[in-house]
Image (cartoon, rainbow, N blue to C red):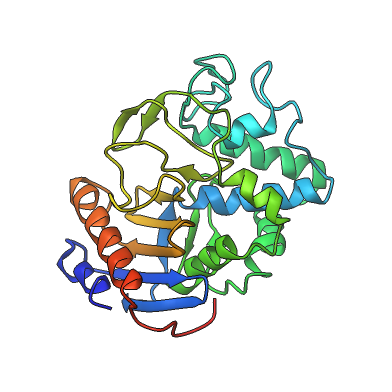
Length: 280
């Protein structure tokens, strides 16, 4: 795909990108066999495991976890008031501000671990990675930013976004629409956004401007990006998605290059694009 070849100009030694539709992977480009760090793209993957635990009855989104008044849902939605990295520090009341918090995701994972008696990395493997056929991905550290794996495994996550199998479609819809709407906050790398929309583990584009997805992506677009130079987004209105992994940390280059590719992918697939090369 011509749109994916734009990645050849990115300032990274290794790059792997893909474009997808509900029918499958429309195109791949780059070092697709390399295992990359996913950084914060780990968050929606870990959130899927938490949602599986909810559907199994081990935990509930209304469980009290974190600061007083906070629930598991608040943690997943960065609405608990916890500081970015210290679970002992609370900066706001729950549902008062959107404070992007690794600590909140880690507490959510610890809650599942305590309730199930299963190490979270093992639960994630059993609940998400193995069912989706993800053979290179693994959690090698924090549930908030410790995933690593290859492009095909990230495309498997995209496939789950188009046709949820791990959780009920209603549960997945809740995770990918705005939770605790109207909260202002800071989107890392893009400054203060009002509102700063997130679902449960997934970022929702909403009205954010500037943003790392394309200007042509609908407000319903959801996904996540990571400081390792990783991203995926799904535009349910267009039925189009893209994923990318690099060995170049996120920076101004990505803030300029990713939206350009997103708009090009949308335009190419809307115009017919390439047929899916493989089922997701």
